[in-house]
Length: 352
View 1 (cartoon, rainbow, N blue to C red):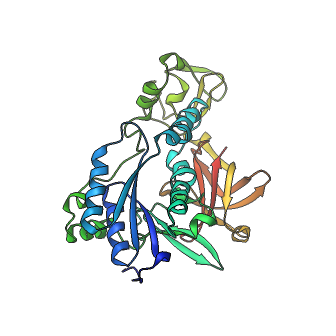
View 2: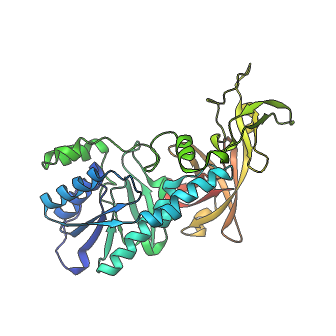
View 3: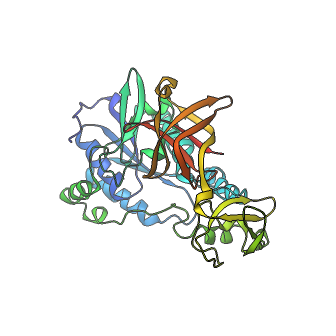
């Protein structure tokens, strides 16, 4: 499990994203011990960012003897991630901001800074691995199935993948906490895992209410699949495909959100049996090698859930059609579909 030890030279300089948490702190320790010249950067992504995390990152950097700096990325995070998050819900979709942030903001920003500062490599505390096959680079699943984060990295391109180091890929979370404690970093070793969306740790509905004018949200109708009125809802952005609980309306059988019409402010409810689909369309598709898709591949449409065999047919304009071997339910527009061969990520896209 130990990282290969390297001799220090300019080609071993690595820029590490340090959030101040257990994982990135342990990554700094492992990289330093492996002989890399490490510099840590803590990104400030939103105005109410907890600056205790910055102090924790600085403390670890100081204790292990690496450089550290803070980079204010709040403006671009607002325009690229938070605004996207709000807009997707207002279009009746269910966004995955962590996917967009990783693939289009965080890792590209690390590369940009690394280029400006003369760093060969970039690193984070993700629980995933890098594989190289025939001069192509892939993300693969981490050793800890409960912490694996490969699902969120399907959009990374070769120019980024070839420079990535992921120190935690071979470890479990328990092992990483033990490592941090053993090296004398008790505070970060005991920090709680971050849960949910970093800028929206609670109910996303509260974040929508706080971020958008109250007039944005209008009561509307719940309908069945035939257009019959079933009751009133509090506003379509407060519901997601597959939702059963919190509808505010009682039925004599389980009912789920089947579809959402932003234009009409309508939410269609149905039994679960009506939510199954045999195929979906994707946009913003990214893949490493089209030859990986000659046969059936594994598709995951939920983080750690719903793995099913499928066939993928690539279309123009970075789109694709996915046909499942068996029908899948609760496939929400805006969510990710990620493709694997065994534990190797070979591509992904956004559900239309």
